[in-house]
Each structure stands twice: as structure tokens, then as C-alpha cells.
Amino acid sequence: MSHSNRIHNAHLRSKIMSAEEAATLIPSGVNVGMSGFTGAGYPKVVPAALAKRIMDANLHGKKFKIGVWTGASTAPELDGALAMVDGVEMRLPYQSDPTCRKRINAGEMEYIDIHLSHVAQFVWFGFLGKLDMAVVEVAGITEDGRLIPSSSVGNNKTWLDRAEKVILEVNTWQNPALEGMHDIYYGTQLPPFRQPIPLIKTCDRIGEPYLKVDPDKVIAVVETHQADRNSAFAAPDEGSRKIAGHILEFLEHEVKVGRLPRELLPLQSGVGNIANAVLADLNQGAFENLTAYTEVLQDGMLDMIKSGKLTCASATAFSLSPGALTELNADLERYKDSIILRPQEISNHPEIIRRLGVIAMNGIIEADIYGNINSTHVMGTRIMNGIGGSGDFARNAYLCIFMTPSQAKGGAISSIVPMASHVDHTEHDVQVLVTEQGLADLRGLPPKQRAKVIIENCAHPHFKPALMDYYKRALDHSPGKQTPHLLEEALSWHLRYLREGQM
Image 1 (cartoon, rainbow, N blue to C red):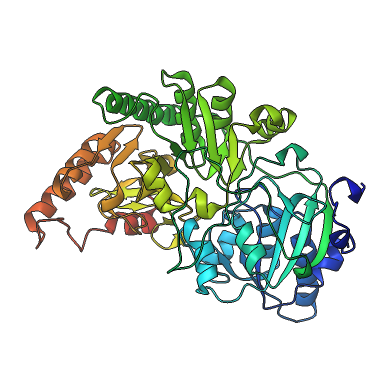
Image 2 (cartoon, rainbow, N blue to C red):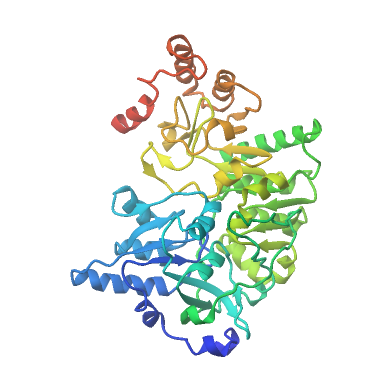
């Protein structure tokens, strides 16, 4: 492979070295900002080389750990490789790697789960300490030293700005047609000097298509040619299709009564099979000229762009199955005018989300009868992935929709419980709750009415009688009647599952 294809700046070209050489420049004890967001645009070879170096140190009895900051989840070559050798002291802000998750829940890795929109500004504020280094994948380097972003932007702008030293991976697998797709906004400032962000419509471009870096901070440039790693999505099951049907019916009703325009409002959708089922139904439905203002562009949105249903999608990264990714790269010029990739501090910016009036749709682990949402912890203490950007959208959306199957583990677990074992989204931010059983519109309802609607519409029939029994007894015996609970029983369902394997 020839570096002349992608690295056109002579100064940075002089810093080309192997991944193994670059990894030796990362010492133990530093905080490293890594590119990557949901399996897209992460560095492919330096983390793996670093993991080998850490393993060698472990074999010689030396402790070697770093702090790893990313945009969101990455891939086995990054999170998995470093977690496997116990090389991560602290991880933020979102992860989905099984080995990483296991170490976090075993207490062997510290983890900070924060809103994705907060990460960049927390780094600028100095709240997280010093960012020593950055390892960032790019698709190319221009003659004047600007960087062509790859398949995710995430926090890369902030990593490049704030890190003392930078390692670049130039990945020639990334499609050169990505150039021009990105919109990197450099207008943010620290309080008290902040200015309004001039993004009025979903597809406004307010920045520039390139990332900037001080060339003197770049200590290594590594050439790669490796694909992003994204998992295939399972076909929507019957439950997912029912959830999608309830949401489509609800949106059609909102249009009919005049609370939504016929082209809806910008869509945000979390990743997963239920989300893709909703998007598939939208693609087959009557709505036209739709837009998306979201974190990730997934298979369903790509299909909607292809069909013409979705005219524009703004995101910070791709999150596509292998088949969809192949299709995108084969015809990227066709999609280019319809897709904008931005830094996550803009894609997830609360003020922009509120101004645009986004319709937010996100998955959860469990909800309680009053509408408090747990989207991160299994049985209250074991982290699954993290809150991601769901909180950024939930609190600020025009419509906030949370969705989940009504039960899990073959019916051993109810997704609707008396009290959530961990709360990520309080009842104040939850407007609509949906399971395959039905949809609960919670807008304008006080707690006791919310409980009745949630139990009646969303609980699985197997658990509905027990939930209603709990609620009625709480209504009689709770010392307070605003949000009635029996505190000695409120988490008994979770305790029963931990003891007996079923709720």
C-alpha cells in the first residue's frame, strides 16, 4: 500500500511508523482519547499492539494500565483487546464489549457512565483531568495537514484539540468518498463566552468537512487497511413488529389531532432490532419527506434514504450491519448529499434537540409502574452498556418514547416492575412507554394514573395481576399517596429473581 494515496502532507508523512513502534510511545498511567463510535471509525492496530505490550509487561510482573476515553462503544480490537490484558484503569463514556463489561462488574475496571453530550465539554472544563494522548483514525490527510474524518466523528475534535500528543491511524479501507460528508463545528466556547449554535434545520451545515490538528503534536502516523466491525442485526421478531406497529399508530394519531406535521419531526432512534423494526414500518408507511437528527445511522435509515422516505440524516457515526456497510461503500456518492456526520457534542446537543423538536425512540432494560426507566443496569447493580445518548434526547425531545419487550429470559423477568432497580430516566422525562402488549401515553398524567395505564397497556399478562395487586396494596398502605410504594416489597421481584431465577 502506498502512503501517497492518503497522506499528502510531507511533515506528517515523515512520521509514518509501524503500530508496534507507535504503541511504545504510550506509557502506563496516561489518559488516552480513542476515536470510535458503535463499531465505526475506531483505531484498528495501535490498541492491539498496545495490548500486546501490556501483556508483556504483565508477564514480567509490571502493572501497565491506561485510561480509555472514546466516543461510545468501539470493537474487540480496541475495548476487547485492552480489557483482555487488564490494561484499562478507567473507561468512559459508553461500552458494549463483553470482556470490558465483565471486568467492570467484577470491580476490576473503573467506569464512568455519563451523557454523551457531556463528554467533550467535561474535558474542556477540566472535570476529567488531563488528556495525555489521542489515537484517532482518519480516512486521509490533505496536503495542508487537515484530516479527513472516517466513519465516525464522536469526540475526535476534542481529542485532537486537548491531547498533548496525537497518534493518527490513516485507514485506506475507509471510502475516500467520505471526504465532504462531515460537518465539524469549531464555534463552541467555554462559559461565559458561549454563542448560539447556528443550526436551524436538520441538514444545515455550520462547520467544515475536516478535522484540524497541530502537526507538532502528532508523534506517529500509522497506515492501516482494515474494515470497521459492526454486527449483523437479527430480523425483527413478532414482538418487535408489534412494538413498531403501536408506535406507528401513535404517530398517525398525533398527526391526525394536529400535534405533529404530516412529515413528522426529526427522528432519533437508538440501535437495535426494535429500532430497525420501527424504521422498517416507517419506510413502508404513509409518511413522506422525513428527516433524522440522531447519534447513529443504522440499516433502517439507510433503507429509508434509498427509498426516498428519508430526505436527510444527521448523525455522528454509522452503525450498519456488514451487508448494509458494503452497500453504502459501493454507492457512497449516491448517499453523500443525504448524510451529515457531526461531532457528538453537536449531534447530541440538548438545545439543538429541543429546538428541532426531535422524536426520540430508545430501548430500555426495565420501567417501573410510575414510568421511571432503567436503561443501564441488570438487577440494579450490573452494568450492561451505559446510558449513551438516550438521556440527551429523552429530556429534550418533543416526544420521548421508550420501548422494550414486556418480559425477558423466557418469561422469568418482567420488564415492568414495581420499582426500577436503577433509574437513568426519571418519570419526569418519560412521555410514552411501549411494549409488544401496547402503548402507554403518559403525558399529562399524575403518578397514580400513570401506574394504571402502564400496567394495563404494557405489562405482560403473566405479570399484570401481581403488578396490579402491588399497586392496590401500596395505595392502601403506603404512608404517602402521591407515589404509593410498599418499601419492604418494592424490590422484592428483583431479589426473588436473584434467589430463584424468576420474578
